[in-house]
Image 1: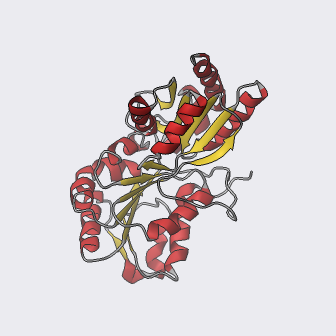
Image 2: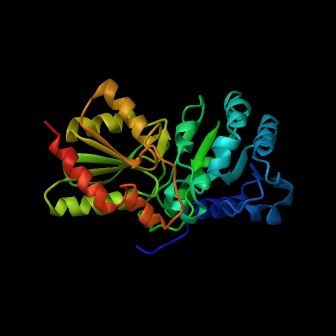
Length: 314
């Protein structure tokens, strides 16, 4: 599988293509090259609003545009969308339940050299805590493009979490279909355990599942593109059928996908569980693959933790 566009660029470029035949949305930018939408105004100057480096103002402006009947996309780095403009997203967008899609880019440890200040590892925890907010994260460029089409028609507050660097395509554009609130079973080798993944670490999970298969541990891998609302049915079914759950995310394990899955399990089908992600630490500068290794999020670490998890099954 060859490298393709980063999920952020795939989403942004596809949105520009959609705009050529769909006039029913506008874009707000914050003077960052977040996902290619800084080029939107060149083709559609009457539909693009630039706020400069003023994310709080941008969210307020987007809310005003939405209150006037517009579908609005706003784009900036996820640290600014989820933290600097946190109150505005909560009070101006989610509370009145407006049609604003917040595009948060440069997420997780994959930002690499951007460092700890710009590595958004808390954004899912923040965004999924807001009533009315839906939270989604595509695994590759194919999924990101499909999500762009779905997002145009989405009603209500939406947070789209995208990554900085190119990743290998997992899905076939001819067959992939995005479905809100539904997990996608990517592989199902057997019932020894289930990996539930959201975002670009899906490729590492699939590689780990192949290694484990060779060693006699048969894994189911679910792509949980929609983190909120979570696919409770898929989580409970996986727990009952495989008896052990591992979550994998490029995010802190506190409040993100792992926490969302744990909340479902503890109330419905408690089973041994392992959360793979950032362990209550900040991000740091460095090569993303080295950071994944140091934080126990690389393929070898996933394989080792999967063996430990299956050993805990009764």
